Length: 126
Image (cartoon, helix red, strand yellow):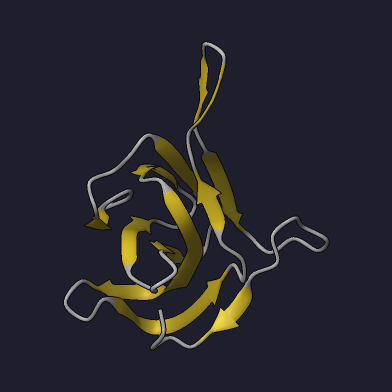
């Protein structure tokens, strides 16, 4: 189901939004610096899903494919995994009476000269 949380450490005050391109479903993950998954969410092809995110330095990873298996935790056909080589810091800051939280949005569609350049990763590392 679109937006289904596969792994969650209980949410948080930050927000992650994923716009998935038509064609293949996706599973997105946020991993901490120890490569522990703090969030994993299923996003259908052509759909948008959002999740609450805890504070921390987190790496965005995603896999696309067909026929996702909850039991295996992977796509059974045409799986391709990618990651942001950097970590994004989800943090709350305060300035005077204002409180600011992180709000990250990713669009999973290849665009030449886009502002997000994922690097490929092995399916087993995902």
